[in-house]
Length: 116
Image (tube, rainbow, N blue to C red; front, top):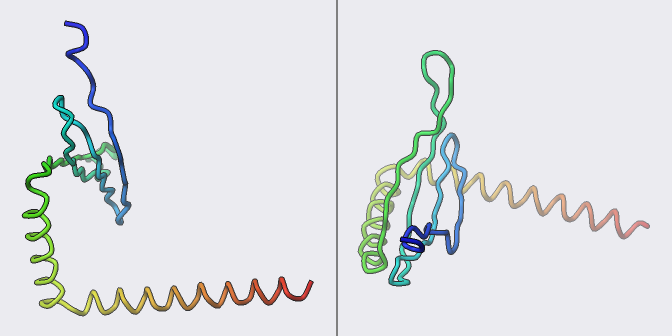
């Protein structure tokens, strides 16, 4: 049956590199033209001979579950932030330092451009 084997193409995609892992957020469409989200975690792993392959884990999330999923996600992240705040405080400090460094570089560039 021609046309029934239609491959589900991504409607919208975002990838996030996070250390040794990459997360893919892909919006896809059902045959009924409803959107859903797939979240894929991809991690490069090596066997005992040093050969590499990608290990993938995938979650399918349907729009009727988005709100409950987000509620659960926010709840557990807030719990972790309260239970182990030191990581998040360190991360915030690193962001502030990076922003200051970026402003310093921008200021230097503007000063250099003004001396032409």
